[in-house]
Length: 219
Image (tube, rainbow, N blue to C red; front, side, top):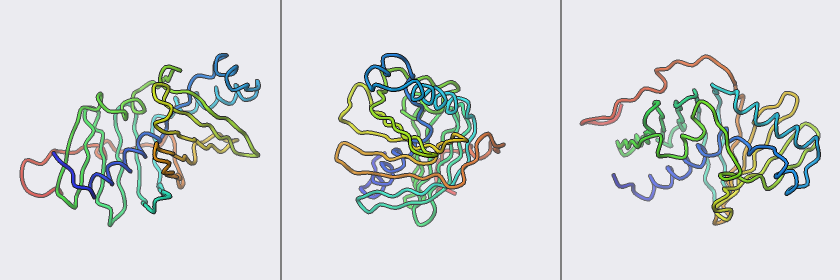
């Protein structure tokens, strides 16, 4: 199925959110420590971050998304690992993305279109699998800093560091993912803030159900 320019723009913004949400840090091993000259406390914090993100099985949150190119969006996101996610933007943005355990379904209510691909063939599978473990072959930690109550961690794809960068921002004590900033290859920065995130909450599996339409409009 082909997307028009408006639909493609919304899809790009939504995929950016998917890729950033709950992306785990690369392993805090000695190689990374030598590359970034991290202290023992830095390494301990990286281990805490990896443990925190890998123990999260469910997430419910409002999100606020702002880009320096003028794009803006709000909505709700639900995640239930393994394999399930519901990402829905507030009106007038008609975009919704559902991962039902097998497929990743992009839904555009405005165009009455739904397109499904195998979840295993998408980057979203990496953050929705039951146990997430990124190695230095996939992600590289390129920055780490700490200020009172805040930890910032930057990562890039190891196979193409120029493609873009993600900065993850955590609150400390308790450690929780609060915000991320995506900088793409064109220099566009997208900031996504989680508003009132709830971790480890009980979710209804029906949130992740979707039947591909055979005819007629999407309900």
